[in-house]
Image (cartoon, rainbow, N blue to C red; front, side, top):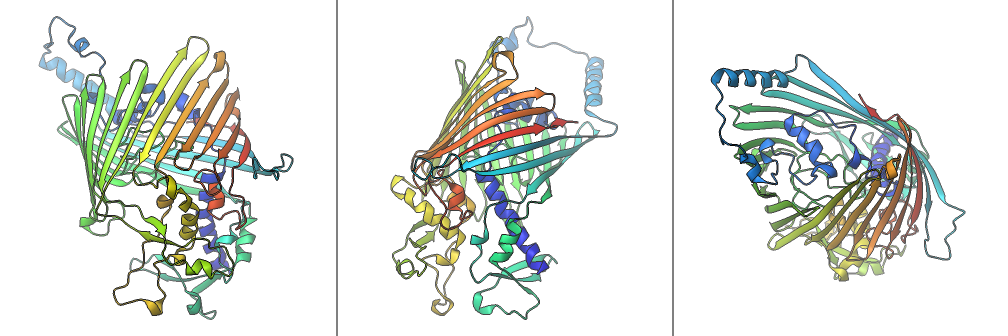
Length: 587
């Protein structure tokens, strides 16, 4: 039983992370936009990443670019001297070079990090805009959260550096009933070891369950309900970054290890970002994301840059290595890039981006073309007999899954950023973005999402799946849905942020986040007020309201996942959050 509980706990932790990402009120998305006190000390390249991810300091520039990639508003100012070339004798040049090398070299290893803690109280309401809505009866919760980042930065030579970051975060038990993820008969796994000695878990079909087999463990719905009520807090540990930087003859610059790679320029959506392992969280677009293990070669020339990447995540054979390349060009006050990506089991992609300024507005955009798609698509199955014969009457629509590898797909986005600093009234910021998702479903197909979520949770209900006795010799299982296949389900999206920080030179700030899927007309609106009480203590109050029809993408994604029971409300929701941030700071 202990083994079953441990295994269930692993499953529930994965499910809980989905719940938290979809159902817990996010932190103020503008808190880091005005000030990033927890930024890691990076090299010159990494310092640019920090600045460029700050919307007030050109968030749309490519962080991989060196100093040569800085956009110059007036090229004539570069040559505003009597002589275009200043002659420097060799002794002076050597002295200056030595001073720079001395600055880049540290005698010891630098350590530092950041800490953040919060208490978040939520009040959630279902049945919005219906007669069953009751403002006096919310579902309340209190979520404590602590996290910390520790880093080390070693620079033993001017041309060699090693950086690593260790992240700690709390994970608290959820009150959501996730026992619905487990069938009535229970969920049985058989444990074993692979050729590398790693422990494996294999699902066992009902007819193969053997209660006397010591390697089989069955988890029941009662087990899930027991662990659901557990509100103890655990600490998750991860290594988001670990890499080495070095160069050859101040000409080629290398990085090998695990680090985030910023390829695109989009804020809420970045279709050209095909290298990183996680997508942008539209409710928290500035949150850290996980990058792959890769080898990067950077060649700066003039004020332009060229990059080559070898991506080695999930590689079993040398030919599984992904290859990506990109070139950046600066023309006046516009930066443009073109890139390509290839991996033998995935669809090849070509991407282009630009970022520029028009008056007081920063404008950015990107486009991606691919031959084929890595997405698993769904369509209504011709055979609906399984739904017609369903005794429990909860399978309403049978879907087939399929892939497309012989057609062009196109995705594009365009957006703008505007910032204005009032003299004694604070700072105003506005970001808006439109995203066309050529791999999404059109308006007439948006109703498939609810059935796709069910198929994601019950892969055996695939209309193309055959029982063992009916499978021909050349039979292959139909492709299974992944989480990415049910995200960004529509074709057209818009997102925007409006914020006002330090209102009238006070400690009060306000922000509003809005996201909408224009294909099914669903979305969310999240206004938030925050106030800094004293150093290291601040409070924020916010509301999260969704709109759309039942089963639409943003209306109630938690219910679509089946995490609130089979009869959960799938319509619009509203929640209020009061959060107190305590003790956050860097060291």
